Amino acid sequence: MSFLINNAYAAEAGAQQASATGGIEFIIMIAIFFALMYFMIIRPQSKRAKEHRQLLEALSKGDEVVTSGGVVGKVRAVGENFVEIETTEGGPVLKIQKQAVTAVLPKGTIKDL
Image 1 (cartoon, rainbow, N blue to C red):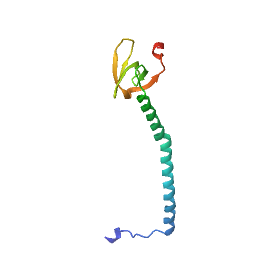
Image 2 (image 1 turned 135 degrees about the horizontal axis):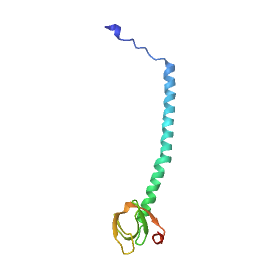
Image 3 (image 1 turned 60 degrees about the vertical axis):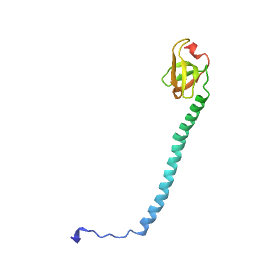
Image 4 (image 1 turned 180 degrees about the vertical axis):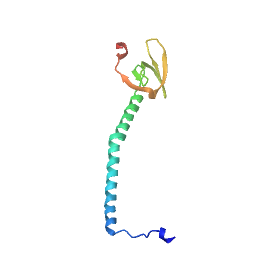
């Protein structure tokens, strides 16, 4: 049965040297990859989230807004988690989550629509 087992020989020293320098290059490549990911994906996303958070904090009664569903209306009341939006003058009032507000429009935009 010993004829089925191959003999194991030690690797040469030159092969070990080559793999050590390849490891450093690999670590540098991974570091560059994570730096690119940070500047191309993570940083812009956190900047957009910060701007949206500031927009929601600045919401006040009388602002004209657009929701993520495309509804345009005027803010009637601002709560902690919800906003009441009047879609037409004297018309129905929608109660939506604050997070659904995507943009604040300039005054008078609703009249132009």
